[in-house]
Length: 259
Ligand code: GTP
Image (cartoon, rainbow, N blue to C red; front, side, top):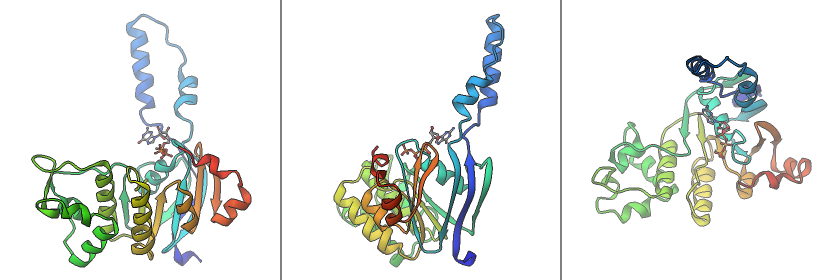
């Protein structure tokens, strides 16, 4: 049913090939300056750089469902999110989604201001919404330890956040924003196993239960809970489907989740 589909990718491929033209030009100029003949570097660079980062990916996600994107490092998980965001333009295929996206990057950037400002990110303060988000992201305990709670200043003269605090703040910001589609890029980096488990349950599964979500994660427990799984390998779709289909079709899949 198309009306309940929030996101659809049809045979999409893409490459990060920006800057190639400039690189060729630079080499040409250098060769000229050194009095060397210009070699045909294009074949070499085509192989090196214009290898697609995503190849022939198809998926669809219904409203309110969770897609887990897994795969080893460099397999194209972040690139897939960038493509949905419109930052990476597909060379082939079609992408369709219906609206507002909230994105939580792997490393959220923090501007100077209070912790609360960093979470609201320009949106108005709604106490109920804000409290549920910071509880679900386990930030309440952290705020309680600070002299000025969530009014504490970040960066200059204020506190420096730990990697885990920064990750949870980035997640809280993305979740606070009202959107049709949430893209969470490895939101559990820097978190210990217990905290990760709690936040996955309370925030990603419970608080966001009615939200359409894409979560980059390679944790087995998370894959089990997701409605759909996309397992990438070197930019290829190694598997797309449910967890039980994954076990049946790719019994060796866990080797791709390491790293
Ligand atoms: P991890 O985050 O390490 O788990 O990897 P990933 O699966 O998210 O892979 P990612 O999409 O980050 O990278 C796939 C390939 O795309 C790698 O070769 C990256 O170097 C390249 N890449 C990722 N982002 C960019 C970008 O913004 N610009 C360019 N030019 N290349 C990128």
